[in-house]
Length: 297
Image (cartoon, rainbow, N blue to C red; front, side, top):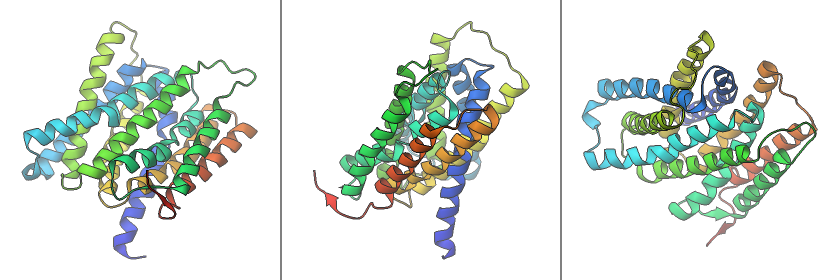
């Protein structure tokens, strides 16, 4: 494998593994903070760091005002809306289940890319994988003994996955000529403003405990996940197909499920392993088989 091909692979694998830790860290942080406040603090810190990076390293490639406004708008469905939904939903949904539900991201990305990108048509594999992802969701969220989870919570995670897929396809289709540093900084900043507004509206006056756990959760999610992983994601979307990039979710899912069991003592039953297997096959069909049997719609 040439060095040119090795770099995208290393970034793709690394971001997937780091992103898999997100779900557990969110659960830990939610023990100390309200969900929207937690999400807002994470993105505010990340936005400050990313804007500093863009200004220091890529000042000359700052996009014109019209493009700044465009990417600021894309930042809402890309990060703002999904963060709000996921942080809120994880009050009830386990880290492992959240990871598996968000693994529908490749399926939603494949469908969205078909309608928005000329070079990523639907295939039989993508359609089959998307349907299988829905079967996995049905298995994972169907009622079981001892379950006290409102169905609106997993539905919120699925909606977050749909929203994020739209944002990823927009970056793939329109962001190839834009500086990666600015592309990331603008979207994270708009998401921070969006989430801060929601927190002020819905969580004003709620108890807030800035404990060591809370601080570590905010800093880790801001720097390791939002700054590093989103810089990696947007760089990858300029070099690889959106549907293939989304395949990294299988690493996220695996890390999320087993880290949830290790750190939070979340149960690993037959349903979890069956769901994880269905997710893996779904991601494979949607991404690896992406060039065969194109379907024109």
